[in-house]
Image (cartoon, rainbow, N blue to C red; front, top):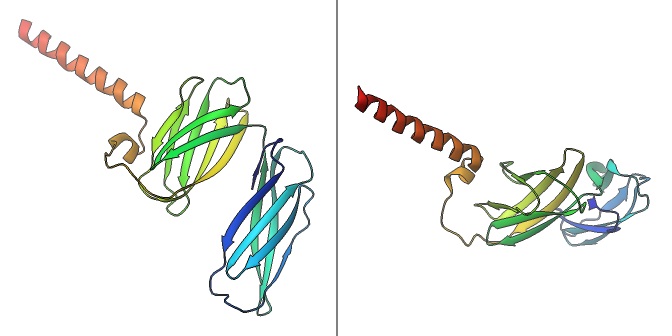
Amino acid sequence: MIYRPANQIQTKNLKIKGIGDESLSIRFEESHVADFDYNLDNENLVINAKLTEQSLGEFESRIIVNHNEIDYHMPIIVRVSEGAITINEDGGKLSIDVSSPSSWSYAKISIINKETGKTFTDSIVPGKNSELTVYQPGEYWIEAEIDRTLSAYATIQVEKIEHSEKNLANMLNLPEKPILIISAIMIVTAIVGLLVRRRY
């Protein structure tokens, strides 16, 4: 669950497989940061959390599901941050910008595929949005480290991929600027080497 001071309520959907019509007991550990409640519809568990305290940071709670007299403990991470990011997704192309704080100079963006754990990274400055391409549909976790003092978090569901071109740097998770700089140095070195060789 991810909160910003202006955003007080969050909802998360979970799918509980293999339950069917069997009865469940669901409860939450006490949390001083958020009040939790839920709605269970067949195998879909909808968790609602309302922020009760404006403390910034990362807090942990647990949901406890009792099934056939066995307790299953699932951690819930609650993150409260002043930082915020805006994400636009178009067929697997993600455009990310920092929307809060209003004044910032640098942000490192990490995009993590929930299923595979594969991470893509980029850095942005004001006026330059991050534009990364993902190659698989699914849920992605996004973290922005803003000016090395604030963090902002978001999740996005990519339903379908609508691009076919493959950017080698993005596929290999390599930063494009250093590759361009190294390539330029190698080309200049080769040209200088050929010119020196011709003279002698």
